[in-house]
Length: 227
Image (cartoon, rainbow, N blue to C red):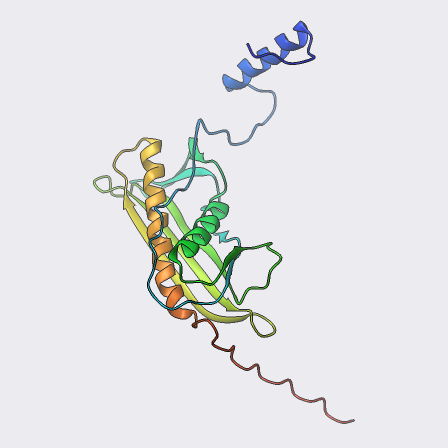
């Protein structure tokens, strides 16, 4: 039994009993989602991409369309119903992990002058906002189960005045699930996320102007009419 510094034997016994009750799944309190296995989204590393250097880009935190905004694994069943796994899921919110994975992939691509995340106190030429439109394990075809990830991203030009929408793009990724065990599901979700991010980067780097290209002129506001 681990030592609790400064605790009396009776307190130690009470804590130990509480731990046993918690591990057994019995509690007087609602502990929320407590998966027995938690995983990270770990897509493959992005390879360097050829092309001239682009401007600086900030990745803002992606949103997520319910029910794709939770930590538990989400399954699309053979009969068309949906189910959350109460025993396995992700260690953090998918929105946070996918936003972080996209920023790392964009940096690894080597195409941008600088890549940052929301909250960094620096000025960026462009920003990317987005939403998770699909993020689940699809077992609707029992012969070919697969992970499905769909991301929608919006590229905003921030160089002149208010942010201006430049383009929007959709990245879709799938990956086969080789076994129904949680570890294999997590591996497939990571691979599908990597494929969706790679698809986004290909469109994104085509939409970003080369570094040094001036921002388009903003339309002048009309002068107030004389009274």
